Image 1 (spheres, helix red, strand yellow):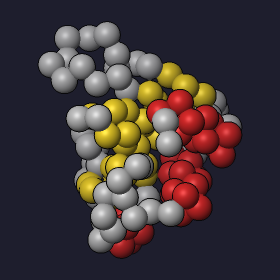
Image 2 (cartoon, helix red, strand yellow):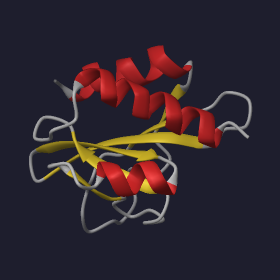
Image 3 (cartoon, rainbow, N blue to C red):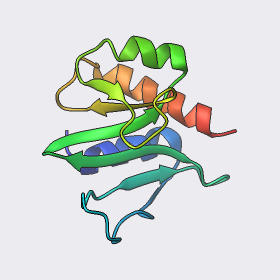
Image 4 (tube, rainbow, N blue to C red):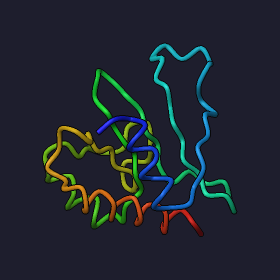
Length: 114
């Protein structure tokens, strides 16, 4: 999957919009952050980025779901996020099936909609 395809899936599944509030600064990492937000409350529901040539997505999951998901290859505590609620998925190098990923995207949207 490409970065562009993943962003489009997140937008299609959530109705969110793409934002780039963290790019262009003096960050030493130079990660291009693709932030998908809710229209109503502008809360972040997903963060898509490439690090070390890996396509990654940060998603908010319930603590129980996150703990279970982290047992799968390619799922780690959230990169630059609260480690209890946010999880980073290495999209092209993980044991998460495409439909599971869509479910995680929907869960993240629901948890950040409030």
